[in-house]
Length: 213
Image 1 (cartoon, rainbow, N blue to C red):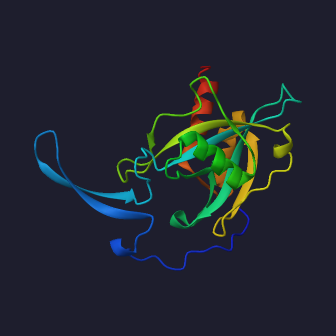
Image 2: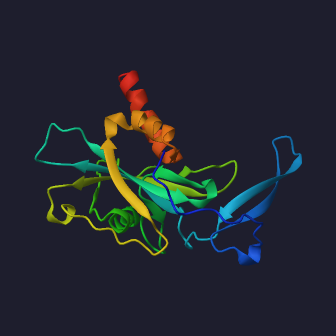
Image 3: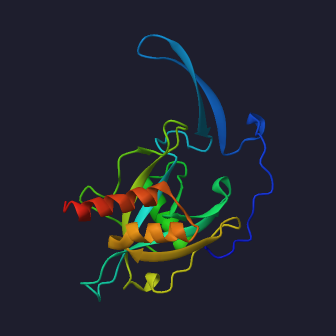
């Protein structure tokens, strides 16, 4: 079981639009391919900056130690209790984008704030993913995944210190990237919830290994 978390859900109740700060429910009226008018219940964020095409970013941060060139790369993960699932979730660093901020800048900023590490966005066309929708049957929330490397030999990465907000309680750890699938299965058995971004990444790594892509 995961370590005891003192956070707990006290009450769940309906939220009116006038009280919503982060997200709200909407009813969409549309026509299907046969011209039949239908309705769809959806959720949407209220925080996307004007002119931005995304709500936020997720960060795939790979730790690299130049003194160990043959060492297995490790991925940076987090443990964070989330009220909607009433569980501690295994996640990648992530956050909402600020006004007029690029996805790359947002990723480096969030990584530094949440973990203390200073990263560099990967080049060669792999640094920024296409826009991804988290759950398009339910909400319009979207993001870009940003791929970042962290050079552990740099002075700023030897003793990283996060700058968390007063409502953030995040534990950072790392696992070998090649073992991510097995680590997710182990963590689930211990009582942790697995964020879909972490689980999908783990599945991709495992598919590549099994089918020798």
